Image (tube, rainbow, N blue to C red; front, side, top):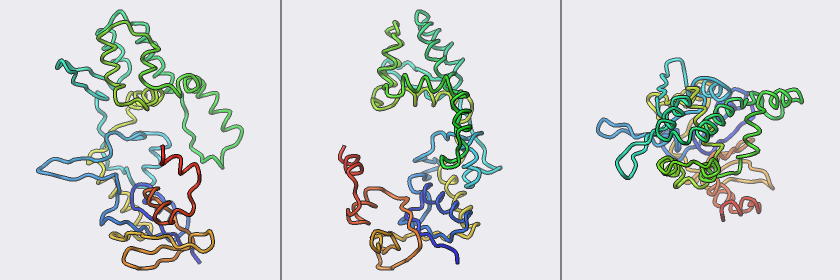
Length: 304
């Protein structure tokens, strides 16, 4: 007999769980409290405009392991058109002038040099860091399938990026800009404007982002978040999965220390061999499981 799985939450994580469950021979049902799939990956239309709540750019829009996952789950298909913008962001400064971060690293480097020619060296250093980040290889196999050779190849190919990770991985974006020691007051103001409100944003994350844009692998799927998740939902249903909207899970039923089912807000009981929580972690741990399985690590994460 097929093993059964209940999945709490119909967002991208829940839909992915359902799709891969169906692909691997399980009988799954997604329980979603909203009427529509998608969770936080959603959008809505007002007076001819689409307000996209989630996707501004998508890592893996063109190639690589992430792209393979988007294709396998149906999030992207052959009809999906990807828009690759020329700019990552355009900032309007307080004096009314614009500061542009171009998607192309070479173009952005030239733009910065034109803006602050006296900072040619630190500008070149920053942009070269971005180019080195492009050597980072993403594993195509899950960790349990990797062997020593896989890790050896990763270390050789990703060497320059790994060294940057070791040096700047725990450095904030503001500290990174400070370390580069720009001399131009104008350029320092512009770059610090990026860092404002991003105190916890890693320098490495910033470098990585510009690499993805430069590779044209962080585009925007036209139509946005709602069609993105609807394609996933259609893929899930085509594999035989059951999506149940307006099904709010109130409690997870346990037998000993094992989850065996759920109780819905309307009192309905559903049982399965496995229960996957693809929903809000606080609600899962504190409400659905009555706070019985909170580890010190989880408690610290929510407290801090």
